[in-house]
Image 1 (cartoon, rainbow, N blue to C red):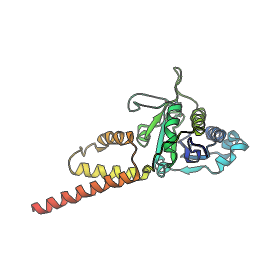
Image 2: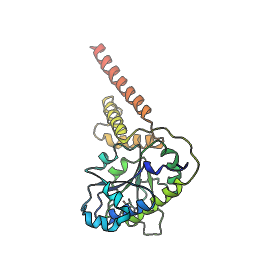
Image 3: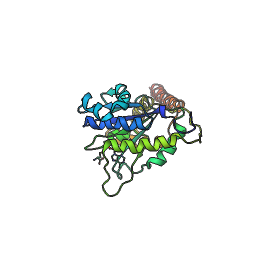
Length: 247
Ligand code: SAH
């Protein structure tokens, strides 16, 4: 094993892909670059013949082991770090790494964590809802026309990750909370913050997005998620106790 990115901890997730050829070509690009875990979420037409044709015989192994999911949140639930890819910048997509900077950043994270790189549908890309599930974003710089073919975008990202797999530096990053653990924490935080009237019950998700951005800047470890959930439980207990004592 080298000191760079652990390729076995990297997965490519294709969300609502329209054309089976793009799934096949993405599988081939992954195989070229030594990445083997592929998950697809609700592909519009998962025609195995058209997928295999573009994957070619060499990448058939990636296609055979491909995992199929009904929704993106489920597909991401056992990943510790999630990267969204976007052709568009601005609005909520304020900040995105370049592929090579992202790859550098993933080196230490990949030692102990499963990482998903998520690609959106050909026509509309990832929605803001999908992006909420991502710790960070990556954008492939282009000339004026920013939208790459899906499988070509997969290739650019996999190539940079492959290069970073050959590097020697290894700062250590411990195990981060999985998407499932984080969503549990956000649900609990939302409930308690509404209950103590810290956030508006009319539109709690709007405010929760600020909290998500804040936590994504410093990805939380599993242990830290347990601490935050413990604090929520204690606030809940204390609130109920005060209420009872006042009666
Ligand atoms: N019209 C869509 C682009 C969809 S392209 C939009 O404007 O968002 C399909 C997918 O390929 C995107 O969701 C993204 O995952 C990837 N992709 C295409 N171009 C990209 C770019 N310049 N940078 C990063 N990812 C890109």
